[in-house]
Length: 167
Image 1 (cartoon, rainbow, N blue to C red):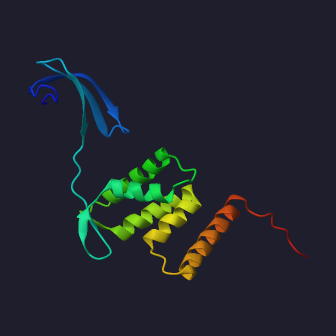
Image 2 (image 1 turned 180 degrees about the horizontal axis):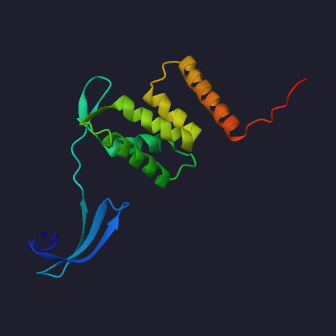
Image 3 (image 1 turned 180 degrees about the vertical axis):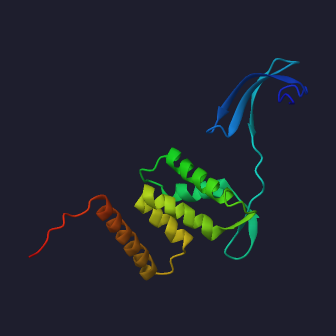
């Protein structure tokens, strides 16, 4: 490993620790020539993943694009950065587990919305409004009604009503 300080091409590992749930190894290194210490990260090289956009164009998958989209939708909402990062991790894991080299942006958006709906309803609506490109208020209202019906169904499943028999 080349030293960033003196450009010498030899260093020794001083400390090594797993980070990011064991997906990355963080190594502290020391230059054999000048003694400068620096940090490197080692991660598994993933196969390239292409995203097929709505217009048919292809671009390389970017965690950062998903992250930025969720951050924008969760702005001024009680959604922590660790939760947002967890959603991005789950989405990436899900699409990589498909084993495909290409995935549609629609599928990625659906995965994000599915996870975001369970975290914060307002963030979900904000994300969905951009992702689904709501054309008018009726489409927006339809999405809200579907969400409210889902909430009602989930709350009934969590708290089943007492059933009384009529005679």
